[in-house]
Image 1 (cartoon, helix red, strand yellow):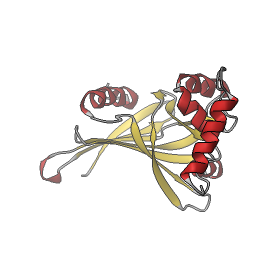
Image 2 (cartoon, rainbow, N blue to C red; image 1 turned 90 degrees about the vertical axis):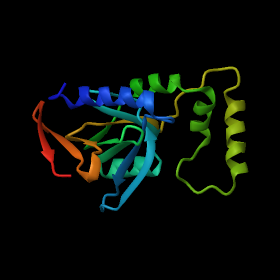
Image 3 (cartoon, one colour; image 1 turned 180 degrees about the vertical axis):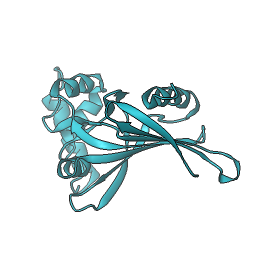
Length: 192
């Protein structure tokens, strides 16, 4: 496990599922415009493995547009209850449509309807306007399955670096950095 950051992530993630009171899968996603202006927001991790870390969104959202213009990002997990964080950086790619379909099918019906109703990241005149769009989606799909909207998709961050940070007394923290070298990983330490 010591030389495999994905296995180490899996172990830490399992601990977070037990100790974090809310959303252990919540992760800060940092993107940037083509000119380098940064933006960060919380998303939910919806899968991970040797190929990368997956999250889902509307491709027309601000993050979707930024990923299209500059397909590289960073993730930050902060598990306060464990006094740990993990930073992950790398290029981002869209998942295959069949993979996005499979995940979309696992979402609650209201979440599926919300994906049709939301013009994510665009200005909204009033909450009532969104609720009217949601009600219209509910009527449109009454009695049938809700298909995945064309622009709702998944993204996979393929890590090139993963840093594991552990809190230590007197701010003498432990920082383990894994960097991808070909198909393997090189591990080193960083000063706190």
